[in-house]
Image 1 (tube, rainbow, N blue to C red):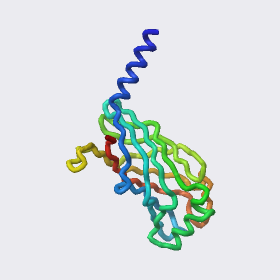
Image 2 (image 1 turned 180 degrees about the vertical axis):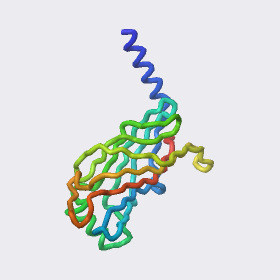
Image 3 (image 1 turned 180 degrees about the horizontal axis):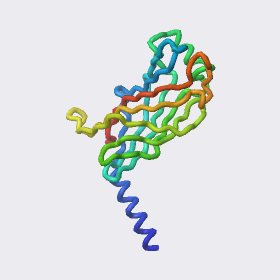
Image 4 (image 1 turned 120 degrees about the vertical axis):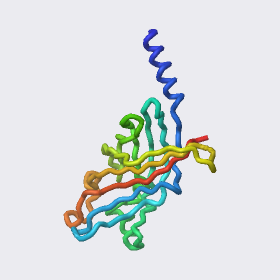
Length: 186
């Protein structure tokens, strides 16, 4: 009984040191690239993203939930944007969001290097690890709160999520890059 109580108190103490950060939608843009018939790489981004990150850097733990508005897709080409929203690609009428739920943060010393989680796209959920290429937190003088930013990347096969448009002419591999900034909640 004493051991269980001690473990519960330690867990609560650890949770008390965690900080929640709100994704800054003006500084967060998931982008991607995919092969176009072996000739070029098509690149696009999503313009509307929301979510939260909870992190305890001292305990080296955290979690996150990032929500991407799939209708905000932007290739810089209006006809391609419209086609990408259609049923045979992102099917935004049925699946208006894609989500990444980070469940386990990985650190190398004090440096965040990866986040293990799950990507949900087209209603299908699969494991995905984000590699954190850059991570930094600073006290923002204007906001008077801590702001953290990162550059993260991952690769996955869109066909694993049922996005089969253009196979085999268009490769199934997708490279994902995310520039993200988040502001400590008040």
